[in-house]
Amino acid sequence: MVIKTENSIKIRKITWVGLILNLLLSSFKFTAGVIGCSDAIIADAIHSASDSATDIMVIIGSYFWSKPPDSNHPYGHQRLETFVSVIIGIIIFFTGIGIGINAIIELHNYNFHQPKIIALIAAATSIISKELLYQWIIKTGSKFKSIALTANAWHHRSDAISSIPAFLSTGCAIIFPGMVMNDQIGAAIISLLIIQSAIKIIWPGITELTGSGASMETCEEIRSISKKHPL
Image (cartoon, rainbow, N blue to C red; front, side, top):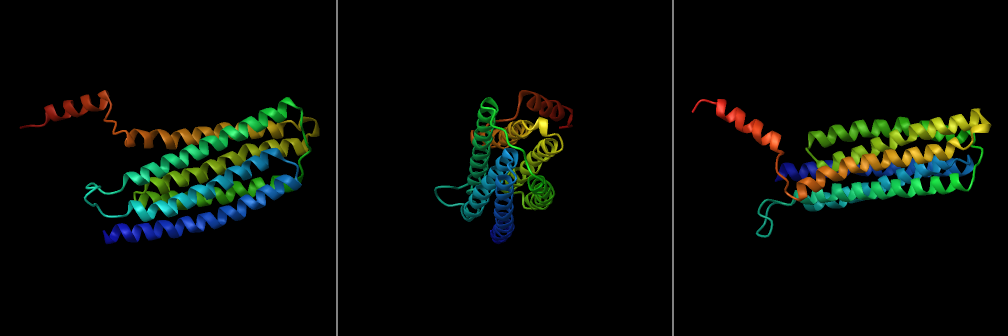
């Protein structure tokens, strides 16, 4: 139990660092998106801001899932961690839906703006910083076998990935003013990437919470191996 408590403390410290860095980055990207007239960067900033909510959930959740078994929870509280990871996935999912709807509306209304270089700088900064943050957190999540921390790491990775089309679409709109609609197209692509990352987080968590068993193929493989073993 001492090891679990120590791990939870370390998980909280890492998540706090990620939270602070994420708030600074999302603020910078949002400001750069507004000043730089880039919907793709503003959408990317909103995605980064949603990371802050999931960071807070991991910090709070870690106080509960590290508790030892009790009379009501004889197998411990680890499923709370899985539950938190599913909630993180749901938040990411609806963030992606919202960004996609906004991009489609602006494309339909021909509401285009010429992005500026500061928006491009913000996207490049996001790609580098969020990828570094992902690498650090995913290694820690693997070390402590933390599902929620791993899910949160993938949220950071999805943020880094979503900044790539933001960077490309904004850069294209800056270099080729006649293709300014690429900024909104980039925002739409970002929404699809965000939704995809959300599904990757939600589905395994739901599978575990509903107590799903192994597939028929896996069961058959186990039977085959057991039959070959000498009695």
